[in-house]
Length: 256
Figure 1 (tube, rainbow, N blue to C red):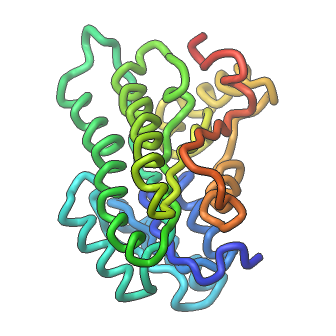
Figure 2 (cartoon, helix red, strand yellow):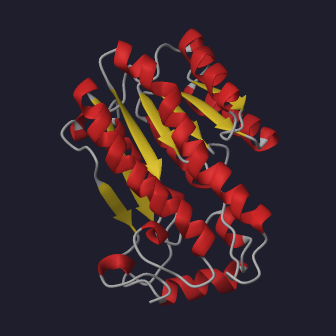
């Protein structure tokens, strides 16, 4: 407890799945958290849940489109007014789409790019001024094991996750002198609504069969990494890529 005391965090895609797990862990460790998501009902429900568990004034839900620069500017400004300067950005929002190269519509490819890659970039861009003005901060970008290795029918999605991995490295070099650390997290197959929509229990069972630990992950497996990277315990970690995948990428990805 208390590993994030006095810190202010934004968690995008925070209403459910991995994002909700991160938000719960952040509040439990003492952070004040803005949950940003397009899912209004789930976001409000999470705010109500965490307020009931931890008390008022620690978490606030904001409807937010990560692909909209103006929405980012408003989000960071409002967070500063409500809780104080942003010290942690969990750039977690993302969507998953599968599609063969020869048949995937360009509109689907562009949607993946706008949410996953552009959204991540705009988030970094939005928090840099306040982090610089307040002595630094921690940006944690959600990539994937598909940002480390390949998988069939995943070209468009993987392109965004490789891009996030690359942007993280560059941002770490650029922002490090301002004491802004930028790292990427690479989850494997995690049991969330985003993954379950692509096959349900059958997909989870298939995923588990590919993992050395013999099971798929859960949001509770991801959140502690975000806590560590947001805390002062990771003060010398910058530009890292951390796989949280049960060992899948120790040899290859799911498609290997």
